[in-house]
Image (cartoon, rainbow, N blue to C red; front, top):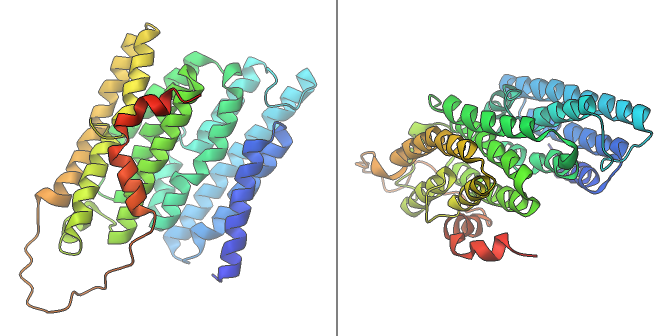
Amino acid sequence: MSPLVLSILISSLSTGTIITMSSHHWLLAWLGLEMNTLAIIPLISKHHHPRATEAATKYFLTQAAAAATILFASTLSAWTSGQWSILHPTSLPVALLMLIALAMKLGLAPVHAWYPEVLQGITLPTALLMSTWQKLAPLALLLMMYNHLPQNILLTLGLLSACIGGWAGLNQTQTRKIMAFSSIAHMGWLLTALILSQNLTTLTLLIYLLMTTAMFLTLIFTATKTITDLGTTWTNSPTLLTTSMIILMSLGGLPPLTGFMPKWLIIKELTALQLTPLATALAMASLPSLFFYIRMAYFTTLTTPPTTTTTEQKWRHTPQTPPLLPVTMALTTLALPITPLLYYFP
């Protein structure tokens, strides 16, 4: 794929996301989502591998179904209320249709089955793009219309996503599938934060983007496809693998790392609203996720393979370090002390 075509695709991808996030009209939002979907499909299938073609087909069919549902629901809303505005209150059936479609866009449980399969069939840089940038437009729509959505269903979807993201990731050995189920679990926490506070939702999203970007950049740098590949990269960069272990602990939400911040604040807010059973269930649902993060961390630094090679040169060249990697690593591990500044920022 030529650099010109790649730049056009990236610009279309960003333009579609920006249109969706900035518009208050359902037709413009639908147009932005469609631009976003059609721009990333060539990036998914550019390697001409059968798995990439399969992933592109699955992604297109899922996103087309979600976009058609959004278009149908927005048309139904305009027919019944005479308003195309996203901020306008809608009836319960329309709100449910919108919620199902946006959940499908985000890969939330129980409409999550496409997400791990698509991530498994694409390259790590494209998986990073799909796990971060592609989440922004649907989340912006959810943030604009969360007042009109049924809160009980939102909390149920959040808890279900957190549980399924943890339990389904337990027996995975492919790092892309593990990161997919990790994303599903984090989206569950994000959906719960959506009910509590807009500031908390934005903070949770930013920390999720930071942690996921740092982990994916590490996987890209070390060319890690499976859990067993993690151990073989120790001789290449011990410092990077040690930092990867800390990033995995942050993804699991262990203090005193940055990943502890959103879970701590969400549980605090739920407890303040007398929703202690839900807070307890979410905390328990994070334990399976923590288990497979610790399992990956065990393979990074605690098991070192033998390095008894007698060759002077390494069998592969050391790739160039991504420029964003040091920044994302620092923010992923050291941002917990500035929690009051981030959470109570006006």
